[in-house]
Amino acid sequence: MEDSAELESILPYLPLVIGSSRRLLWPSKVVEALEAMSRGPDHSLVNCGEVLSIAISDMRASLSLADPLALSAPLGYALFFDELMSRADSRKWFAEDIPKLANLLLRLPSLLEVHYQNSRAYGYGLRILGPQQPGMVLLSQELIGALLACSLFCLFPISNRGLKHLPTINFDQLFASLYDSYSESQENKVRCIICYFQRICLQMPTGSVSFERKLLSLEHHPWQSFLSYPYADFWTKSTIPLCPFQVHSSGLIEDHAIEALEVDFANKYLGGGALHRGCVQEEIRFMINPELIAGMLFLPSMADNEAIEIVGAERFSDYTGYASSFRFSGDYVDKRSVDFLGRRKTRIVAIDALCSPRMKQYKLKYLIRETNKAFCGFLDQSKYSQYKRIFKMNSVQLNEGSSLPIKAKGESRTEEVRKSDEKSWRLEDCENYIGIATGNWGCGAFGGDPEVKTIIQWLAASQALRPFISYYTFGLEALQSLAQVTQWIILQKWNVGDLWNILIEYSSQKLRGEADVGFFAWLLPSLPK
Image (cartoon, rainbow, N blue to C red):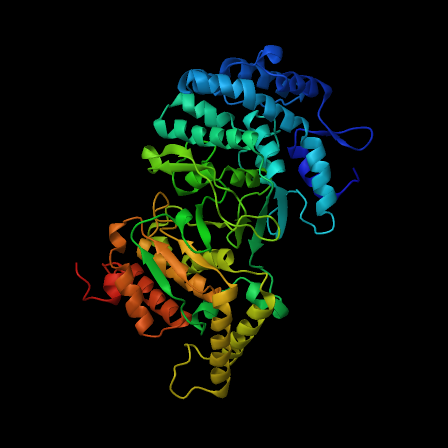
């Protein structure tokens, strides 16, 4: 294999070595262990969780991985495969699935060789997509399967991951926490992962998944000002119209009927507690769509001006419940169509909200941070020409120096042209753009104000030129009047700047102790208590 910056960046985090022929290789002892495992339990003696954990330790020693596994990981593997899994399922797992996974791992070097050959012309090769480095990695589902098999066998080096702000990637903590503090939800998270491996062993998917780090530049570039990090004036003076707002009091984001960008209520470390004890929105999504976990290998934590978009992750598991009531409920057959890159039309954007913000969430600095975070995630930067046209019209308004959005009365010729341009975009948008499917982002464990967060996401979706926002309230009592409030706002024909300025006024009063009710009741005092 030719040397490349892409390979050099990721190689310290892979369990492979470069041989004398400049090709990626497994160390010989690992090859021997995998070949034995591929011939079945009669040959390898890997026939239970306890022996599997020993085989994992031996392979790690052959890779000279000095960092120890989580202390209880071997006990967790034994608990799941020897006690929690039925005897029939365990026999099948070790007789059929483990040999196939071993064969898949043996092919990892060649899968990577092909990957780099195919991606060389497009710059989508596997690499560390570091902070403030926008870019994309495109992986085949087969390569992802091999990488996740490395996670299952805990073969990834971890010694330098913390220095690069990379999240956990091996599964030792997942199994250790199953033993250390058993819960049914943790057991069912593991069942989702095992379902994924069983499915790919039965039939390997042939598509691909892309992982993109998106950012709003902290440096100002006049020719692409819409990609720069916006500040208060940008939002105050925006004349972009508010997009339609749909409220769903029941249902789930991942089941949204129309193609949309689905929001992952993310930790700044992609995946959050998915491979630990976490079991809320982000962690559940990573369990039912395990290919998302592959991004944890090469995507460091997100800064305030960054988001991560993942397209194509297939769903393999069905489930019920949430948090402690989460339960795996069987196979899920993903019937979503695929695009020209072989990616399923499942678009997921990870955006991390402020954690435990309390009163500071009403300060201008943090309102800007949250709105920009959502805006970064919602903005489709590939639609450059259409964005340039709309933002150019918006920048004309900014240059006129008005401190408030223009009203209909006495509007200028520039404003008439802008409105005509916006109208033509809206007609185009219905065919060429997808909307946002979201919910109570940053409002559960993170402690955000759900009424404020809904408005923030609406502002961001509208400014990003999305044709709609579909909001799932998950039955949250604080959002019972959301449909009524959003319908009233739309009837006022407010634009982004109008709604932003009203949100700022409410937040200022909240900070001064002059508003002792939520944003909705403050805006519409006639709402039922």
